[in-house]
Image (cartoon, rainbow, N blue to C red; front, side, top):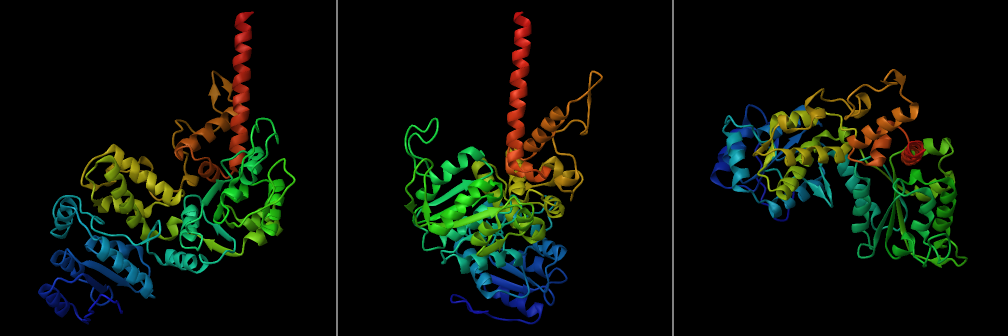
Length: 467
């Protein structure tokens, strides 16, 4: 493999390779697991050359093999076929950013010597990064390649993937690598804005257009002029607004609410959804003509369970970040914790992993993140997704529970289930809705109906007391 700053030397058996490595201080060592990765070779190299990047090559993606290699001291495991550009980027990043704290280096030495302390998997690993993404799996390298190719264009991009898989990061990376990078990047979350306010948020309004419109205001489309407009969870947009968005895409002009004058804007549109757009079209919830206007450059983000080799690098990145923020000494992930992380299904994807690591950092102290520090859903029945187990926070099973001999009303059961799901996802309505297999707008409507019921109940009680 060619590298502008490297003097490569190749060996076909381990002992000459090991002997040569003791004579110099190599910056990078690349080992083929098929020929040189057996009989403790990796751990010997890691112990002898702690300053070097130890990269292992596997002939196929194998979770158990990758884990074993990283436990032995490998910083990275790559699968065939090799992407030379991606490998060179990983090496460059390691050489530029390779800094180790004394605590982290000491923990790694303990691991190499087989000390009794929890052995660190990732304390010295510098995970592969692309823009704000962490992870160098084959699935993600395909995504990075797509982003590189489509970023220079001005054509619309349609991003799909489960909640928490990184759709907003993909949109930000496309903008950052585009000719519009210095212009605004405006985000509208269609699941977080009530439908009646959405049109004004996107297209703006003029003074007096509706009650409360005391002054004219530009919308997100005008704010993004010259840059990029990212419509997240576009599947939550109602059909009436979809028709106006279609006109905007076709004409390149916006018309503020209450105005008759179209305003030209130069905006690249990126959109994302966690739903199957073809199923939404078939169900009549998404306009087919709008879909084909937006679905020019598609990107599909893999679920975290489909790129498990990225779980430990992601966990290490989150551990490093939150340990620094919270003033903790964590340097790496112990094997017992790594096994739990690797075998869980992660229905909430990267966001759920991030929250799990952050919770552990806030609640615990130590040099290594151990299994006992992980949230309960990870150290209980591992490997189950939230969709296959009760939502956390419910003290009793779902159903028509009795209150003093009475059946609990259906609306109260719905309220309890939805609130438990919101608790499980830290108040994130889009993720809770995905887990419950309902739309975020349903949660908004239900919450409003609960407020009306509670207010009505309070009023009735007060009137009875006064009488």
